View 1 (tube, rainbow, N blue to C red):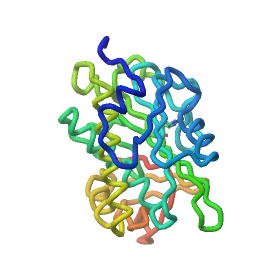
View 2 (view 1 turned 45 degrees about the vertical axis):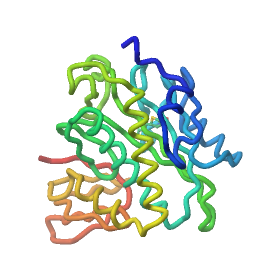
View 3 (view 1 turned 120 degrees about the vertical axis):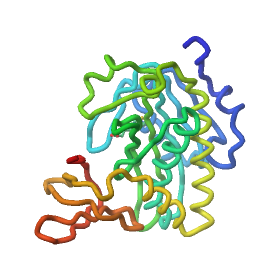
View 4 (view 1 turned 90 degrees about the horizontal axis):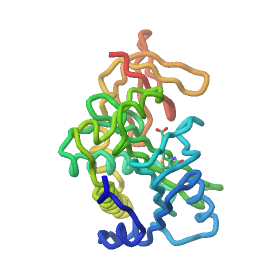
Length: 261
Ligand code: BTN
C-alpha cells in the first residue's frame, strides 16, 4: 500500500491526546520497541512517549516467545509511570483500547482472550506485552508493547503457532496503519486518563464483558501448573477463576489459555 507511509510527524500531527503520544519516535526497523522503550524509561523520559517501528527484528512475545513483525504490521510501545494502584488495570486498558480501535477502524467485531490477546472470529490479531520495573511498591516504569497484524497475508502467518489473522485478511483489503495507530493511541489515552481519575471499575467491566474466555472450557498453563475446567469469572485484579471438574475454584494470576471448544 503506497500511501501507508509512516513517520513521527505524520502520527504526531493526527493526534490530539493528552498523555499517550505527546511525543512519537518512529523507526523504520528496530530489534524490539519494548527494548528501546525500556532503555528510554530507565532514563526517566517523559510519560506517554511512544516508540513505533515499521519492522522488528527481535520482537518479543509473552512467556518468552518471539513475535513476528514484518513490514506492514504495527509494533509500538508506550512508556508510562503509573501509580502502583493502576498497574493491574494496564492489561485491561491496553487490550480494550486495541479491541475498540480495531473495531472503530474496520467495523469488525473483536473479542479478548484472557488476559490480553485480541481476537477476530477466534483468531489472534493483536498481542500485548507489558513489562514493568517495580521496586518496593514504587513503579519505576511500565512499558506497554502492542503488536497488531495489519497488512500481512496468510502465507506470512503460516509459521505462527496460534491461530492468527490480520486486518487485511479479515477486510479483504489493505488498511492504513496510520489510522489504526492514531485510533489506538486515542483510546489508550482516554482509558488511561479514566483509570487515573476513577477506581478502574469501568475499564474492568468493559474488559470483562469483551472476554471470549468466560463460560468456556479452558486449559490454562501457569508456569508448571495446568488448570482445566470452566473459566467462571475474572476478579477486578485481573485473575482468572477456573472451576475444575473436582468443583474446586482455582485463581490464575498469569498464564496462557487454550479454549477447548
Ligand atoms: C504476545 O501475544 O505474546 C505479546 C506480543 C507483543 C508484541 C509487541 S510488538 C511491540 C512490542 N515490542 C516487542 O518486542 N513486543 C511487543
